Length: 309
Image (cartoon, rainbow, N blue to C red; front, top):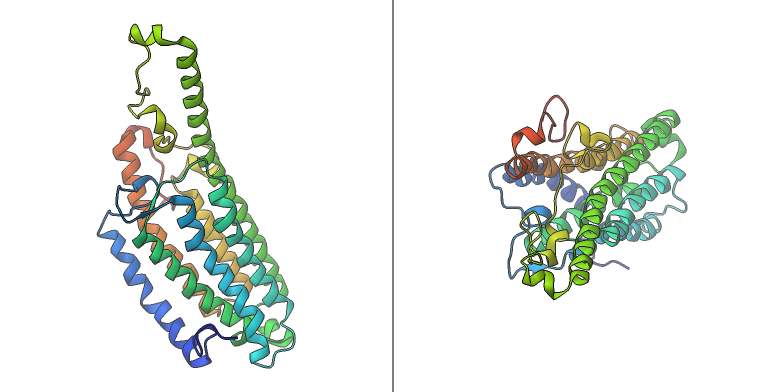
């Protein structure tokens, strides 16, 4: 059953139109981030009546991507007379689902805290997911290689295997560096809890003597310190760059592209659009670290590409 007749799932003509717009229109839109510093989520979240709760917003803007791809891969083959998709199509679809099952479900649940997300960012991310999944899902379901011979020409087995390996290396790196950021928040939350327990143990007399104030050592109120505590991470690739979790995600989708074949237009568009949207955020994020901690503490760390940015 079609959700939007002719568009979801898309006809070949509509698929070509969506893909072309995805290739040509998104990078210029994403480049606006180089001109403005307003990015109301995460550590640059702002107070606004249009904010959404962090966890719920994250889940609902990320999950539609892999759900759309699963929908297309379960409905489009029959519509196009395909009885059974090649194993390569199913594996690539599985890689996409694995990544976004982590990003959409596990990631927000593992976070010790999440800042509010502005509805504008939520809507932009949702559009990204829906368009990207429509392009990739359509290619995997009907408009890409559908036979063993087609796959032999598109991505020979050694290339496919190497691409999968690269994908999993990127996925592991992504999780590792995400976990390092989570650990910083966990340590901050533990310190906050210990400070609170110590104050409760000290009792009213300590407050009378002036030792029971309500502010933490970094000037953030004790009730919200773990929400706003930041450090410069040092583990893994954080020794060399500030956004290795972004870099590792690019490695993932480079591996996906390699496995799908160098002529896979939707995979190329995905990788290019990921870089277009994340690179200016990383460069802006380095500026944020320098302003908050000072250039001497940031040191020679690159934003995201050692030797370049």
